[in-house]
Length: 93
Image (cartoon, rainbow, N blue to C red; front, side, top):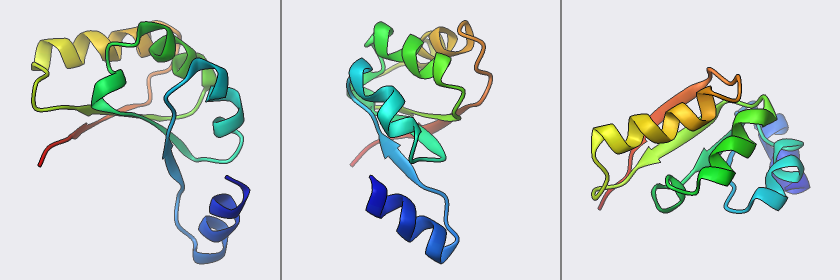
């Protein structure tokens, strides 16, 4: 993560990385500009709440098997923790 942050700073690009475990949210958040939640973790409600508390923008991916309603409900977990910075991305093949 330190190397990724340094390279992002050197080339002037924001750093986005997926976090998959509630125990890693604080550590990853130290080095990235945006946290990503992959489609498989969009129903990991503890993780959604934790990234919501992080204060970082969140890239919430929506997989092919997820409905728009499920994606919106996942986003609500983040929003309820006071984080209104949720961005959608459609995952797929």
